[in-house]
Length: 282
Ligand SMILES: [Zn+2]
View 1 (tube, rainbow, N blue to C red):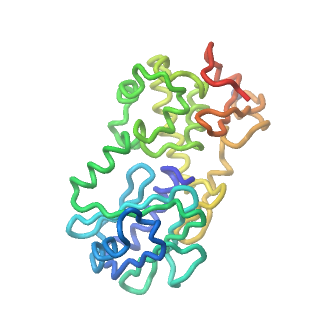
View 2: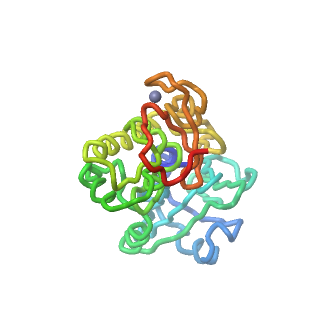
């Protein structure tokens, strides 16, 4: 699933092509894409409006149109956004017809991806504030802010990192990469982390996400850039998806267990286990 660095990569690719351009119309081919809203309601709300800004919040991509009409999209498992000159691609769910002839195509094999319109900046902010914690790349995501989020919580730190209401945009790949960088075991209850560990974790989350952005995201399954190219972060993983391969720090084999239902990769030497794991290792 695309995480913050993958969505940010798409945002940066689309922005110069979309910002300032008029959206002639949106054509929703799959009503499930915008459920429970009616496709016609969305199409009417955005028709003919200029795209002022391409934004991102967590894993959501945001088209900010004139008159404070905001279109929020989530790629979920297999959604892709392609900027092309053609009208058709396999698994097409929604087609944005742009002034000047280009098309932005939302394609999605598994159909979990979504689109929705938020009218007004207050509605936009309320929508995201109800679903998402702070943006980890914002300056106010400090060690102190992370400490406040973690205080008193007994969830394993890996599950905590995956919870979008706590921190926006981190998913399975970047959680494992951050915990490896911070030398913290994924099952460690987040509320028991010491102040220096939380400071290390804050830095590690930022560094892992930045490394992902620098590599233009990870293409391990369906993720593609807006021009169809692949990211390269999958070639730079430190821990994620490296079971049995040597830890880049100590050389011992990376291990795998399940946390919060997700395959989790870590080094059992560099990331020491808590005394009483909440979930048994597999
Ligand atoms: Zn190690």
